[in-house]
Image (cartoon, rainbow, N blue to C red; front, side, top):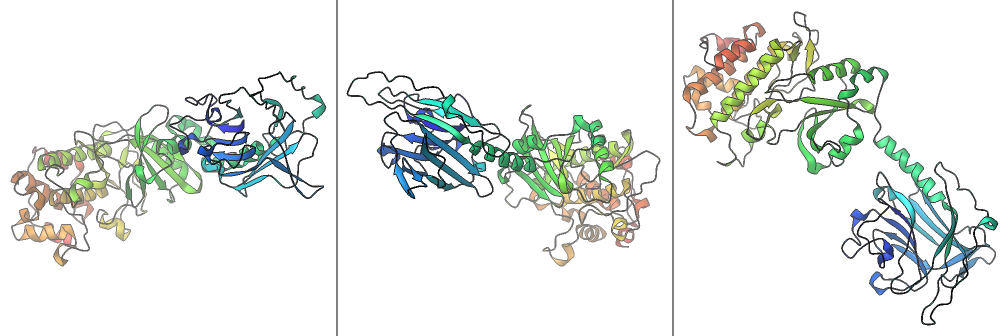
Length: 538
């Protein structure tokens, strides 16, 4: 028989007459079992490399013991190990203890009338937290193979909150049933486990494990957040959703965090989870309030921010709708792009208009003014039909319409940052999004990032290269070579020139997003760019 810790009470699929009732022929030995067993085995099985037919073993997900020894106990009086028999019917005591700090598992055996020996029978260095799951069951299991063998557990003691489990009063234990006469070809095992300290193992382990898990899944929750409860996710749910934030679930990495794919455990909804270190000068409370407010945005070209989770040390997790085709930059800058994976000009132009529509909604059409502050191709996400939506609002700021923005703290990505932010003379207002949108227009049309240090000297800064080509009357020479001639020249020229118009160094010279949308829709002609070179070059 075996003392067992297992993730389920039923152990579905386990053979009742083999493998100690714990496994079957297909799952034995698999790490997915999450089973720990202390076996008391009176049959030698060569399949499992048993040392003899009278041994105690520590089993982890398998019946090939990781540690075993002949049944015996250390006599403190005689200062030596004394053999014990698992066959014969004499009552025995078993202690199983785990020391979390030392990651050590001890197993001790002794006759019923002997105090717990000072030296255990088995001692194994092992980190059981890698095996234990969120919910585990504790008990006993056995299998009889081809002959009937009675086994009895006369008593055991359990302790949850540290210290030793209560000592059993041996005189109050039930008597062993009277052994029945069996066929002489069979042998009888009457085995009792009296766990006076058996559950010290469980208590010590559970305390260590719960403390570790509480620390692992710790969150910061203050009274003021109760108003935002519907928008708050449990860290444990996000941890499970992303499989522990495994690299295999990583969707992308940026300057402000790593984004993981996840499936929420209860709703089975696919989400994207971004881990952000929030050490902004902006107050945490104000930041969360804005995150929750942004979660109310509803626009066909804006990725929904579903909610957040706040942890210790300033870590925030932002939860978004999952977009199956990822970010636009992967299609634009992937060096292995083929004809089947390249995004056409038709789709690029549609995405450009979608992002412009989203920014107009943020700047003018929602109940508050939202400045995104991180417009770029890597934050434009694509659904299964390659429709574009603006995402990642982790840096966004909200203002009431008609108020003067106060934020001067520089955040964003180099190449998309408006010059007034870099110099410290400007604030986070809609014009900084327009500047970033200009850089976005150029990267979509040219297939190049705003700054490419490894490019030739004249092409390092994308906007300067496009200005130079425009001034020579050859602006279409900057078009992404992957497109070949598969684009509409008038649309391409419009996008390139509009990119330059939005990239002017003087904020007031940039168009607003309503004007940008009208240009893209062909409702009004683009103004002449005769003075643009000087405006951008200053």
